[in-house]
Image 1 (cartoon, one colour):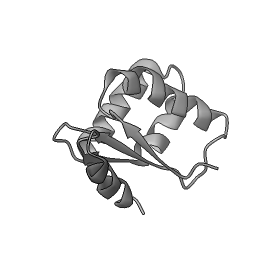
Image 2: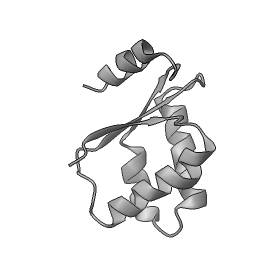
Image 3: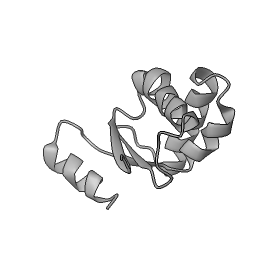
Image 4: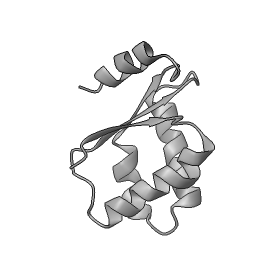
Length: 98
């Protein structure tokens, strides 16, 4: 079962409209492990808190009535400013989660 994952383009529109609501639905269906961590990777100069604010807003706008899952997901989010076209930078960012 998935415990750690990364979202390339974590601050983007597709993440906000599609990926994050999908995670909320998976959580509502008990399909995610309690130990889940998610690393958002993007070029924006954000930190974990700014990314969590983005996630919170996106879930509020796009995840419907799954509000009981929102904070559970927000608490599991982390962020790394990363050039996703640079394999070495991605590898360094992802190992941060280990």
